[in-house]
Amino acid sequence: MPSLTKHDAWWRDAVIYQVYPRSFRDSNGDGEGDLRGIIEGLPYLASLGIDAIWLSPIYRSPNNDGFYDVADPRDIDPLFGTLADAELLIKEAHECGLKIIFDIIPNHFSSDHIWFQAALRAAPGSAERARFHFYDGRGEHGELPPNNWNSLFTGSAWTQVPDGQWYLHLFDPSQPDLNWDNADVHEDFETTIRFWLDRGVDGFRIDVSHGLVKEEILVDHRDPDLLTQALRIDTNDVTAEQRADLLSDMPFFDRDGVHDIYRAWRKIFNEYKNRMTVGEAFVYPTSRLANYVRHDELHQIFNFDFLLIDWDAEKIKEAATRVISELATVGAPATWALNNHDSPRLLSRLGSVDKARALALLTAALPGSLYIYQGEELGLPDGEMPLSARRDPIAIRSQGADLGRDGCRVPLPWSAHQVNFGFSLGAPWLPQMHSYGEYAIERQVKEPHSFLNFYKKTLELRKRHPALGGDGSITFLDTKPGVLAFTRVPGLVVVANTHDERVVMDVEATSVLHTSGPGVGFASEVLTLPPHTTVWLQR
Ligand code: BGC
Figure 1: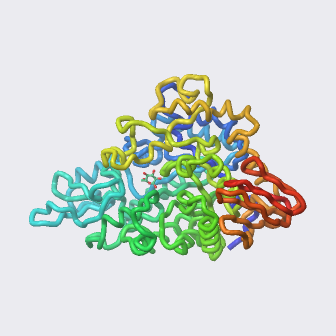
Figure 2: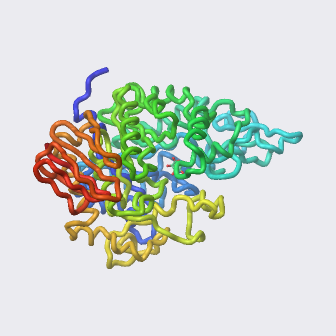
Figure 3: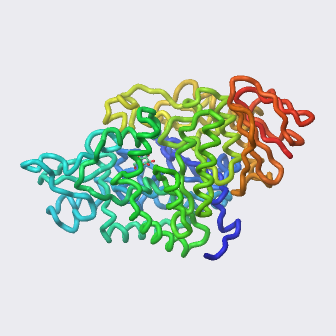
């Protein structure tokens, strides 16, 4: 393998900001964010000190699942703008010094995609149906689904069509799973990848990257309901042992055949300069994550540990050590994400600004690449709203038994004083809470100790400090229970106090570089750290 320079491998330690386009900024007053809105927001994004933006999907879609139900992956949905707007965004982002990553959704298409529409019209056994997973049902008249798998969005994973056959959808019925044993599917995705790479995108986030290959499709799962629970990253209704057991042999996720697909894709990426991929994969155990980032597959893979992690020194140390060491076996950098569009915001999850800032500062000092989800830099909590205002198919299909993911998708507050907090002149597609004015960008920019300025300083130091902004080594130090401490070379010590009590401890360092909160004392190598606080110390 040719060796990569820092410039070629920009993604190894990049800070990548996830834009959820529908909720970022609206330029035309329809209450929905759009591409022109993102272009307007580029100066703000560049001011954060990030390296790249990742856009959740903007492709043509009936929008049954937040645009993750794609009807045409090579066209832009009119809600967001036009192909020309997308090209302009790519160009302007580059001019602002930002790379730009798009989402790609290979596990399923929308049922509105021309292929699925053709499959519905075609006969059982036809070439059109072979691009999806169509099967006859069980029971005397085929009235039962082909197996007992559940959709991740509740209910059966199968829907029957008028001629009696059933098709597989691991998500919403409007998201039929693609059959990756079919050559057309491979060819079409290669065309899509080249389509966007040729237009200058710097990479892709691959949705459900562990899901493409299915095995034993006509066999019942031994415990489908418990498996569904185990797959929910935000529930504790299953024990760690049950989760480990069930996730280690799922017939529809993390099958070995998926790696052949990424090997083929990597060859395409290697034809272009400095492009990258990051996979979304919920796999178990962590050692299996490393398979996705072998030298001839993807460049990065998400781990979900930090989206769920408790503010607990021992748990954080265990997860960080495990992820870093497993990925190191294949020479891949770790990625860290505290928030995304599928999970409760950190503030709401931890219920404390102090804990959120302390975890963010700790995470920013870990080796590898850092993902930030829009609004995270504002310390935004989840939005609350009645069921009637919710749009997530999880909330709708479960009739509110599961409130789903709308809370973390509420449009951003730009200004405390403007209508709809400066997001749009029209009513936002999800309601913003009154309190969102307190978090407005315009207000936080002016407050020296705001969450936003804390994030900016963190990212600026991460970029400037020679021990940070790299994917080098990390050494954890032995310390008191409830306290996490590690060093990064050269010259940085990070200490986090997850206790409710102040700690006083000896630390070999010279001065304080940055803290997540007030009240940190450091003199003559004695550190006084208030509860729920992280400090970066210079050695
Ligand atoms: C995306 C979700 C989406 C699902 C189905 C996930 O991994 O992040 O937002 O609902 O894939 O496409």
